[in-house]
Image (cartoon, rainbow, N blue to C red; front, side, top):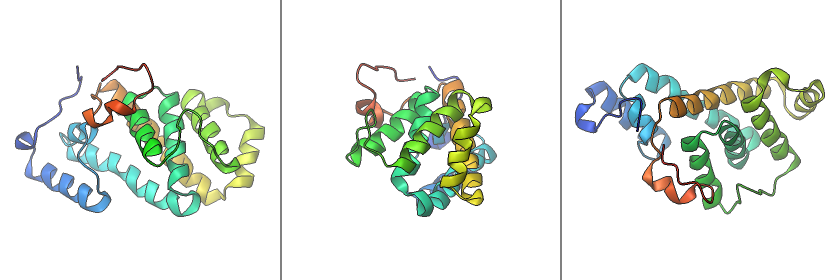
Length: 181
């Protein structure tokens, strides 16, 4: 059961409805359970939707697939049901196997880094940071860390808020996973 209130359209303020409409216009998709929950407080919704701004900035540098793999690694390592299944769907629908992706060296670096960020951000080895410095410019590292921070925040929001998994994602859960919140 959800811990945070998830509002129906009739319960949302005019400002919240406009924010939802603007989000769909700018980034497509739909108003998910997470977004519907965030719409109960428009400044919170706006802050979390900046994830899309950083995603759009990253894609020209590393590609949409790498962004999805990085996001999935963070979300899966955080055991965030909503986010990990969301990215599993993206990867599966694009023909990837999220449990055993065939990746480039850069994508593997992002997968490993994403897991480290989620599991133990205080102990990322110096030699790994050196690899990141070789692979990514200072500006790109800054955007990647900021993006990862928003991804972790999104994981936290969904997990602590007990936001239920959208029904459209049920079929994309890991084999044997029957959780819905």
